[in-house]
Image (cartoon, rainbow, N blue to C red):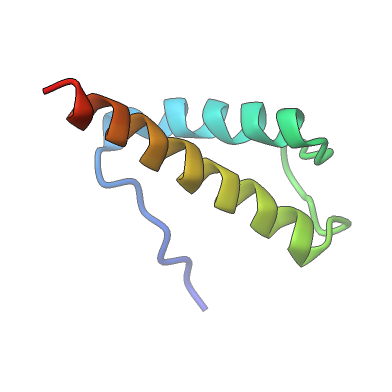
Length: 66
C-alpha cells in the first residue's frame, strides 16, 4: 500500500522531519534515520501524537494572540 502521508507545503518537509526527531528525542523514542522496524507501534504512535499535540498548542497560542 502506498503511503498517504504527504506534506501539504513541500517547503516544510525538512522542518517536519527535524521536528519528528526532536519530539522523538524529547519523549525517549530511539528514532534513527532509515529503518525503524524495531520500534513498537506504540512508540511510533507516541511520536506522531506528540507532534500533533505540540502543533495544536502552537496554533492555539498564535490564535489567542490575534
